[in-house]
Each structure stands twice: as C-alpha cells, then as structure tokens.
Image (cartoon, rainbow, N blue to C red; front, side, top):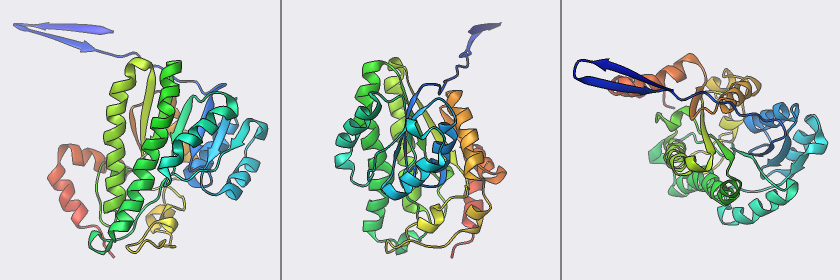
Length: 285
C-alpha cells in the first residue's frame, strides 16, 4: 500500500508492506541445538502442531529423551551433528533432506557462550566459539540454501543474542560470533528475497537454560556455574512462544528478554555514548 503526502515543493511516498503470516501446519522443521534449552522447548512446542521435526545436536542420547517428551513422536526424526565440524555439514544436510523429502524451516539454535576477559582468553577459544557459533551455522544454512532456492520458499530462523547487538564484558568472543551472524544473515536476506526465502534473527536476553553452565572460560573449560541473571531470566517455554509468534509474523529481527536488555538495544541506537558508560559499570569478575 502506498500513501502520497503532498506539501509545497515536496512529495513524500510512504510504502506500507502488508503484514503476512507464516503457518507451521504441515511444515518440515529442522532444529539444531535441540537437546536442551531453547532448542528443546522449540521441539516440544512445535510437536503439538501438525509439524514434522528433525532434531539435531551432538548428544544423541539427549535428543532421544527430548523426542520422548514431545507429542506425535512418529513425526520426529533424530540426526546427530556437530556444528564445529562445519566441513561435514553438507553431507549432514543431504541426510536431513532424505528423512522427510524436504525441509521448510531451519532453526539455527546451536551454539556456545563465553565467560572470560579478552586478555585471559586463549586464541584457540576464540576460534572454537567462532567455528561453532558462526561458521557452523553459516555452513549448515549455505548447504540447505540450494534446496530453498529450488523450491522457491524457505525460512531461516537464527538464534543470536542481545550481545549480538551490544558487546558486554566477559563475552568478547561470543559477542563477536553473534555480531557476525547478523552481518551474514542480513546480507543473505537481501540476496534471497526474490526467492521467497525469509530470515528471522532472534535476539534473546537472559533465558533460563544451561548456557552459562556450558560457557567456555579463558582456557576453554566450561564455567559449570549458573549465572544469577540467567537463572532469573525468561523460561525457555515463554521465550519460544514469543519467538514462534515473531516467526509467524515474518519478523526480520526480534528482541526477546527483560525490559533492561531490550532497552539497551535502543539506548545503543540513539545514545551510544551513554550505553558505553553504562556497560563499563557492569560488574566484572
């Protein structure tokens, strides 16, 4: 819909795009990072709908447990994979396509976090986080992309983070990997718009998952401690309901979290120096 506003010597055209809605009914959905947290909650919620699911992560035993917790388990297949082994993801994608004959939506949800100062973080840890969070997600998406282009439809949903928009202490490598995802998928969205392929970037704030327990410290070992902010965050189930609503509305980018996390995104946009001062005052241990 186009509105024309005419003022003296000025003509302004405002283009309003009609809001469309995606329907998950009878869709084939592939979820990475499906063995716990947000990925597990996604699997359970989507299993209540008329959806065929492919669940992936490194831990096959946990994937089987998730499948048992889902409804309509006969519509669920398990495909173990390791995003860090990104050179093998083309073969894994071929396996995934054979399970149901097609794929409609890929939830890129697998990844790992960090809890260490930049000066204390070994470069090997930086590389591992980037390999897993960025290159693994990109490699899997690029492997599936020809299938989406061929059928002239598809949807990539990418779980990034609020720190994919705002860098904070103890998250330098993690934040970098999430910023990189925004750069890649924003570019991809523009490239494949003509192919009716959608991209939703989901930026969680604090969500009650094992992300802080599994987060890598400076030497690459897991932190094995639950952050208080994570413990007090949104439940995975609540996060997933909001995420699916955003995907159905074909949102390009969505921030899901507490008031402070979402506010920080807008402070960064309009008052970046103020946010820098606020970020410097965050507790660093």
